[in-house]
Amino acid sequence: MLILVMATLFFTASIYLALYQFRAKIFGLHGTHLPAQMFDNDSIDMGLSAKKYEKQQDSAWSLVAQRTKSLEKYISIPAAGFKKRLIKAGSPIGVVEFFAFKVFALIFIPLASFILLADKFPKNIVLTVSLAIGFFLPELWLNKKIRARHSRIRKDLPNIIDLLTLCVSGGVDFMLAVNRVVKDLKTCDLTKELSEVYRETQMGKPKREALKNFASRVDMPEIHSFVRTLVQADRMGTPMAEALNMQAEEIRVRRFQQGEAMALKAPIKLLFPLFAFILPVVLIIVGGPIMLQFIRGGTNFGF
Image 1: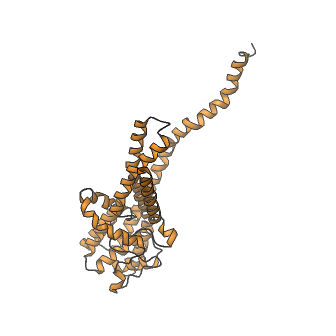
Image 2: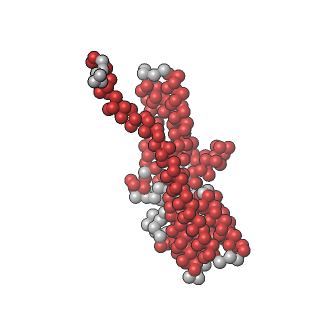
Image 3: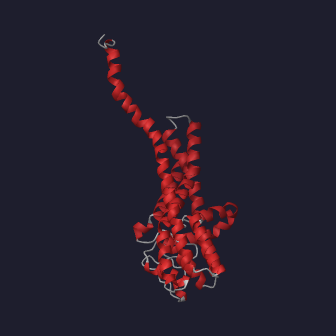
């Protein structure tokens, strides 16, 4: 009976997490949000009306996340680090939901492993491996989300900096240039973050503080360098267009160097599949006839 109840809870939680994760494809809603703002899926209008900056509820799952947010104070000791990492990933789920994911994984992966594998393998090995999988699976999922989001931001950053450079070179203020780029470009992770920067400045925060918050949320070397350049240019009176142009060139050079580094690592990464899969097949094809000749009656090399 206990196993049935736990299996039911696991099935319900899995359906909830699956619906929450893929609600953009199921209900036509956007899958991520920043902590301070829900963005409209169709367009981002950054006008000065106060209603444009009110937090919009985009689904019933947002209401669930808000109600569980009050529970974060009870897990405040480890929540700070997880909250920062979830923000870096684009806040796909809340802190409480992530902790629930970890608890479910730690309970039900060992349970399912015992039900399916206890008769085939030693129980202590099954328990150890399943607990390790249940503990690290949520971490791996979150790290994958962070890497994917950073990759998308890194890909879009040089082009957006070029557009900002064009706007600033035409005499537009930097924050108005940010507003223009966010309105005209297709919605992506970087435009959402820039729209959050613009929103914070319109709500009264200084531009430097809004940019530093942007760098803290994304937490990428390229973004830290970008924000540092903007802050120094604003403080020293350097032309913003020149600073942006230099920053875009530096990011492109860094991307090219990263591509070269990945290309140099490729042969080393190919060694394992070469020795594990390709070389045994070649040995079987070449040495198989010789081994068959040995087995059937010795060798005859023509002497």
